[in-house]
Image (cartoon, rainbow, N blue to C red; front, side, top):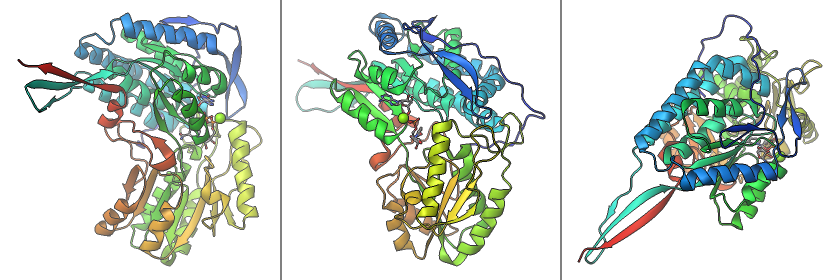
Length: 494
Ligand code: NAI
Ligand code: MG
């Protein structure tokens, strides 16, 4: 993630919460059942809003609206350049409201305001603009077939897409999914995570204000096994795009199979971050710290298996420990704060359970390991050394500020160990030897490899997982392709 340094001068005020209902066919509606669920501020555990709890009935309405817009509305038939113009307008409106949206993200998710204002929201704007530029550049090709025929392909929108997103980057995950869907002319039913529905609902309001036609973007907040499952099962949905836990993706895959929906998955991992002895140590230490602790460790690509070459291991760990201890943890509305609370009680409990596993399995707890304060879901930056490949903290996704440090001695050994997992989302390598870096990058079975950097994202660069870390790619031109069907047209020329 881009880490700008521009910080607001003083503590940021809490934003107003405006949209809490379902957004269906351009209207704000209570859930058909009348039910609501609470969303909380993770730093204080207080309820900040009651949000419409959508379920099957609301999903049915939303799919009908998206279907009607796709099958008979103006969106997919619109001049593509005009579709792009409306997307640019949406990006502009988000930019005008960037301070407020960032504060809303911080309120709902608990992430530090400095991150939401300088990483999440700018990346949202950039992603929508990037895909706006694609809207009128989606084209097929002419194919030299045998015989007296003219053959060409068209890239057509896949149709109504169901999009299910997690809570770690709520607005950004909405943008990653809306961008290619809007550019290609698809219509959308989005189910935001139950922990963090607010920025997505606000962005839906801004989309309407931008002039994106009613029914193009529909948002149904609610829980996964109810609203989410209804969306996946709905025969009127052509594709599901999901980001979240691998176990959830497998449930979704089975259900989506019934109607042969297209699926793309962006799941988690246990990404190896490998530091060779010839690395720029200052950069690698800061990089390793950022790779794991950024966003409270709640990143699908977190550098959670830190492999350090034996020659530099002890010095590296000493210096990393100092950096970890200096991390400023506290009120996410304070611009100086670097680490906020975990998103909810369930994540907090899961992370502390893994701290116990680390101790039970014989790793050495070097710093942290406990709750911070007595209110909110804060966990100290935590680091274990002496971690072995078969320990639970080296194998399973913790999704919190818990670092596992492993030692290695040579290149062949480390490539094998780095790949010895069912995941393959991201990896990084730190070395001054550029040939070694490239050789190593080629050996890694991961969708993204960072060399001497970490978490560098760009809307133009594809992102997604090898192996069990996902299916398909998001972002870039590859991300667009996942929202189109390829049609072949053959014309007799005699
Ligand atoms: P999850 O996969 O259950 O939730 C993600 C989204 O899927 C939410 O919108 C949720 O409502 C929805 N969902 C849940 N069950 C569903 C179902 N049966 N059908 C359709 N949609 C469903 O993830 P959760 O429970 O929030 O977190 C559990 C763990 O998953 C985390 O501790 C972390 O390890 C991992 N995770 C990974 C993420 C990533 O970016 N790769 C993001 C969030 C969680
Ligand atoms: Mg779950």
